[in-house]
Image (cartoon, rainbow, N blue to C red):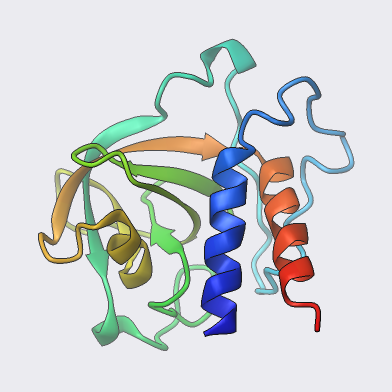
Length: 170
């Protein structure tokens, strides 16, 4: 329960601080480093970001679906076991380890997910999110929803992880 609260807090703070680091670009030593929380065997290459003036445009808009219990514990494309309670997703082309803000276009709810798998396998869909992400986006019952994807810079995720670590202090 404590982990879920900390994850929720980290996601809310990261979304709120998306523009906080806009004045400074990534440090060359930071730009290729994967977040310390992710420990899986494959190398993680961050997504290439468009110039900042283009960051207000969506990376992609289309249909999203979710996957859950039947995949629980099975290996993902990144090599880590699937956890339906994590905020993760499957995308056909984004580098594994990339963070994406997913916004439900029907209710404007959004979450940040980490790409750790490949998919969707059904034509016409742009992303498959985990059960928890679909629940937070409030489309778990519908199964499919029109969403907007925005790339999230690594420094934004690093700030959220620091908040999560602080939240877990005794």
